[in-house]
Image (tube, rainbow, N blue to C red; front, side, top):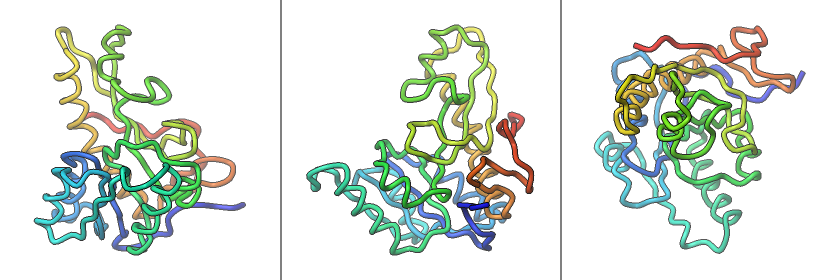
Length: 223
């Protein structure tokens, strides 16, 4: 049975892609520094040279790179250049942490089983943008975040784990987003740790956790 994914490695080599302040990146770096995540961020790459998260990475003496899409004629050429940059660092895992670009099929295939994303909803519900507003407009009593392997289907790859966040009376998109983000930090570092420990595998027939095929995401209790 063919298996794509990350071989157990200590520390796991991560390249993190960001577009903004990089709060999930900061959570990952904090978990590494405190010894709870057996990984190393070997590079941080952004599509925006002014992304605040790049400065945070530089303060940690991590290699940073910015690649402006305006310098490329189309998405395919940009993503080929992006993959070329990433591959220089020989990552075990590519981590999307608020990278606000839709990736091309060729890029996704290149990193099949080694590319993960965190999305602020309980997938498959509320794919795409503005999830907090949409959850409130739909009248849902529960929101949350999901970590999934990236496939060619937008926010449609196998979901590894989720965390649920109750919607409170009086919530607005900002208050709900803040509570979800706090849980994202816990969820993402936990899933990356599982991958570093070799507990997660993506095979031809589905997603495996601790050697057992799973049909539903692992659920992390909100903390």
